Amino acid sequence: MTTEPPSTAPAAQPRRSFVYRLLQAAGARFATVNGGAVAMEYGRPAGQEIAQASELALADVSVLPRTGFKGAGTVDWLTAQGLQVGADSNKAYRQPCGTLAARLAPSEVLLLDGLEGAGATIARIDRAWAWGSERPRRPIGYLVPRSESHAWFVVCGRSAPMMFAKICGVDLRLHRFAEGDIAQTSVAKMNAIVIRVDHGATPGFHVLADSASAEYLWGCIADAMEEFGGATVGLAALRQLASRT
Image (tube, rainbow, N blue to C red):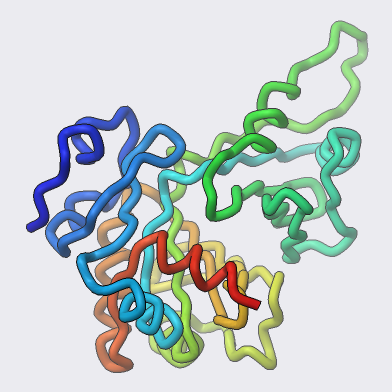
C-alpha cells in the first residue's frame, strides 16, 4: 500500500471518498481537490494508465463538487442563474464552464462539476439559492445536496458498454445510448444514475448511487471488469483523455 505524504493522505483531509480505503489498498496516490483527497494515479507510468482508461477503467471522483435542485420553478430559476438546461428530461447539458446540468425530470436537475473540480459554478449556484421575502414565495425549487448522498464513479473505455451488459439492464451500446443520455436504472441491483459523458474520443459513463453502498457497487463494477481486462485509474488519466480531441 502506498504511503501518502501527511498533507495528502485521506485521513488528513476534511473530506474523503466513500471508498477511500479500497483506493488506498489498491495503491492509489492522492492529491487534494475540492478540499478532499482524490485518487490521482496508481503508480503506473502515465502512458500506461491512459491506455488502460482508453480500453476499460474505473475511477472514483466522489470528492468532486455536485449539487441538485428539485421542484416547481427549478429550471426557470437555474436558467436565470445563467445555466443552459434543455427541454428534454434524462438528458445532460454541458455548460461552457464544464459543469454538467443533468435534467433527471421536468423539475429536477443534478449539477456535476467538470474534472478540474474547482466547483466555482456550483458554489455560486448554491450560494444564490434562497427564499425571497415575497408572499406567496416565488417558486425556485428546493436545494437537494448530493455530495454526501451519492457516490460518484466514472467507467470509461471502449469495452465499457460490454461490461455494463453484465450488471445493467439498459442497453448502453454507443449507437443506442448517445453522449448526454441519462438512464435512471439498476446497476448491480442498486438504483443508480448513469450518464454518458465521453472524455475526448473515449466513451465514458458517470455512475451515481447511494453512498451507503458505495463499497459494494465499486466491488461489483471491479469484478465485472475483470473479464475485459479492466482496472482502476486515477483522475489524472481522465483529465488527460478529456484534453484530447
